[in-house]
Length: 274
Image: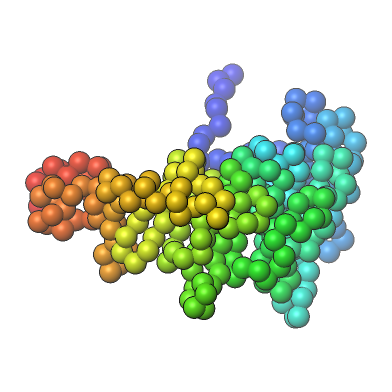
């Protein structure tokens, strides 16, 4: 019989439990679905022997990231203040609860220490370890991103009360001052630098050059002021500078984004556009 491989547009193929060989699955906990008396789908977990480790009780789950200690993110739907609300938590490979299901948002770390960005039922952001230790108290920042390589973007306010962006480290300390209009996303992007936006200027700050807040100005000033590391934004937030000197950018006015996307990174292709 001809065999067909899994097509890239499929994330998973669902089969009845009796047709699945649990012993070939390399996961310590294997999710399964069962419907309760109200015909509501619930998710539980079995081991490779087919023994139920976690009874079906969760509404959603997602496998852990490669560096988050094999924890599994699980969720339950509740009614809060008259509205359906999904709350997230973590369980370990034995099915024990690591972080209770009480967070509206829970982002595991990527290539980082044991740091989880969480948002509580009142929409406040914080950072917690799997031990329950609060690294950043709820409400200290208006928004916190997930940790990647021990760093996370935050939004707060500067001394004048203006909304600004910064970056914190695994201790919760600011290592990029709260003085930028925006900081581009690096969570899960595998980038080598962090784009810092001030007005219409974008400066690339290398991960290797990020140090503690008390040293950051003297440490990064030379790096950030190199002209080749800069680009500029127009009124719509589009970047300019990478292709400066080309007719497509300097005369025709095409941004870096357009040249990268529409012209595949070659400004000379501009001449082929009707």
